[in-house]
Length: 406
Image (cartoon, rainbow, N blue to C red; front, side):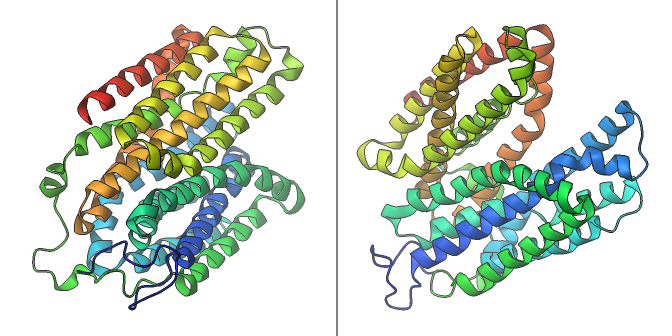
């Protein structure tokens, strides 16, 4: 198997190795398009169910909750499977397969006539989704070793910004052309993403598919034996668990600490946007931090910074301090996440990297599904406690990383 990450540091092709910067552009933009398209109409699913004849708050909540939850649940189960298949048949083909499925399912969602059809299509979407971890592997594999953090950071920035832009654009489109047409527009976006990967990403010369490798793709036991694998998995799970815990409680918490009702929606939106933007910036600057300090220091320091931001948020200070704390929290989460993926990518042999990222993403997706539930139960007792528990968990994580990875 050809060694990953070779090629000149200025991005030029040599000895049959493709231009890694061109590959990076294709994967990053396709990922941004994919994550934007996914959130173009999905946040408005309750309204869509209402148009399909579902009435009553409870019924709408059940249909929407199950439909939104079934996709990441199935995707989490399938992520290692698709990563193994990618090891055997090539990652580019798997990303094209996944994005192509989105083209079909999004178009089909525009034509449904009953709520159960939405649920079935969302389940189908989870079965064929999972291009996120494969795209991360493609970026890491294409880049020279010294630029791996840059490559991973850009893709994670795209994954972070897409869901930030999608609902805003989707809201405008839904009001302008309707929800059914918005699903069709999302389908068209995915066509663009497929074409971008097909024509823009050059896989030949980076690796040879493992179809002729008698040992086949690496098994769980092989990945499990990699140094710090369980630590990496636990950190990814923990970071995502904390990152998504604010959603169910933040508006209620802001109201509890005295934010006027007429400013509640604006302040909540501003804090979510600042957190997402700071996390995106954190993904982007991690490569520079890793040039100066080892990954154990970067991850531990970033987690500690996020812990500090979370605790300050729980204290409920002035609006200005809240906004700064949200930025500190988001930046810490962004840096820590990219640094962990980079450390894992650098530690793993080329033959293991794709499956490794698949398992890490499974942890990410499981936390995505679990976090709102845990946050809701804690928030039912105390809204403020959510932020303090998050801060304490991040502080413990920082200590474990610093101790175990040193």
